[in-house]
Length: 173
Image (cartoon, rainbow, N blue to C red; front, top):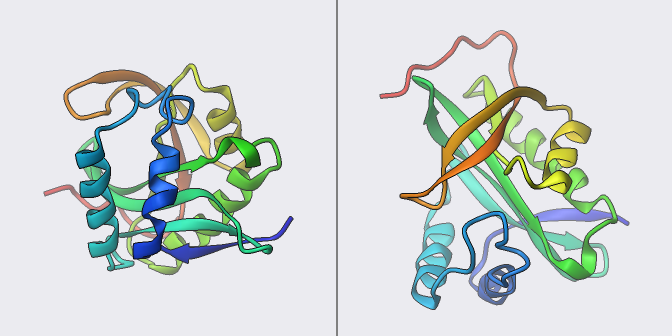
């Protein structure tokens, strides 16, 4: 099944609401309020600088919107890195879409030629997302306490992928 990444658009609010279902948010602190979903949607629409990060809809060759993926910059261990995260709707899971989308977003982040590393922080209790990291070529650095949602620590795996081996680390400010 072929897919493409489409930059986040106003019409993707329904996709974000679908991703807010309890089964989609099981490893992410549970569903968000409607107000939080609307705030997230506005932020995704406003975040339009590929150097800093972008959100995408995962779109199948049939035109169906199957999930989301994105990358964004964040400080991590005194270094500025990109982080990535994804979610594939239940009807489309188990088809390799998350891995294919991860490969596509890696290429978009790599094209920015800005940061050395891309990280993913799936819950240690989420085998599917950890498998996506492995299949996409990330290296497992180990377990870590990761704050998500804000104010809540979750036990996560720290997966890292080198985007540009020749780039030096950028200090987080």
